Length: 494
Image (tube, rainbow, N blue to C red; front, side):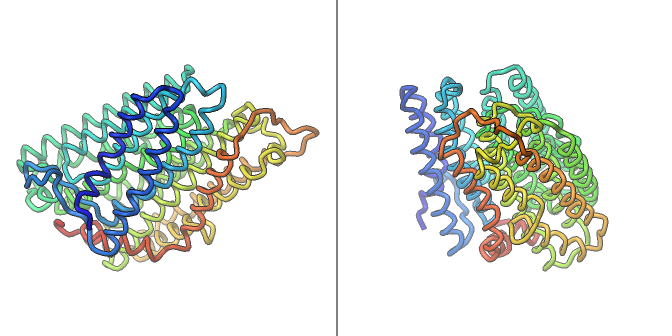
């Protein structure tokens, strides 16, 4: 095992940010793409180490607790890191072409430093075991994501970015206040040390409530979703893909850690899991309904994210109910599969949408008449990504919903089955509606914008990945069940 690798891995994107920022504007894309390639390769070495050995547990700089900043990378962290690496590299390749277009050229120098900061913040967020540093990283991710949202420069994107920023700050303040309560109660900041010593008191219950609400607002769980569709719908295409596939996963990952590690011994998670189940059902129904009635292409995909988030939040009521340990592991596997398949498919959809908008000059689906003639590969990409979102075999989305349904039936919480069943039907409705407009027969296809080869192929590769991941259940389940001992079994520390 390379003991220095995790520290170097976490430092790499921030070093890349400094390098890219110092480069002349015309050479920044080269530095940014080089950094993206390195950031893609490094997590695979960490994943191989965790796969063959055990989770990585270390303190940066060699300082012992409580002075050192704890790093803990288990199987769950590895899956989030690998998702970020794959989506991050392909978004970078897409952005290379997208921002070289004349109408986007002025935005290119600002994109690369902000993108690498966001990427570095996510990697650190998936690796840290320090709850105060988690707050700092959430702020870093939120500010850089809001700045990237505003990159389009028009009134809609600026308004959406400001709303996103205010929600992110409010959520972070609630999270920070909860961290303060935890420190006042335990005198510790390492989440695994807190998990072993936290008493079940009213102060810890207040911390649980504040942190949960703050993170749910950042993840855009219904009814805190109001900021997501404008932000994802008005940002440039590569940024929309990163926001939907990665950024909301960051706060969701932290929520998992706090519910099932920091607060696992308290009564709060067991008593309130059903509330998140109701919100998950509401998110699926409301988000999917809104996607069905939108006329803007990117807003359809953005509201789809609101609905798809409901599947991921099923893990909370499932693990709060009476469930055999074997089925708890099944629920974990389903949640992990949903995170991966949604991230890959949604990134593919947003990049494909960027291609359609670039070619047609419009975001209105009613004007995408016969666009499939000009961009057959992009239309095929949207269909593939839709297969995964609908949960059709053999996609990763099918594996996620199959595992979740099995856990739901084993838990006896039959009403939760409405989420994957109704959600799948509604998803099919807006995916078919979207595709139907691209195949409307017309005398002339409305195609005049240029779509580069790399923009077409990156979206296709992401969509194919969302399908092919359904064939790699063994590795995904191994990381979640064998290399995530604390989360999977509700244990107390590494």
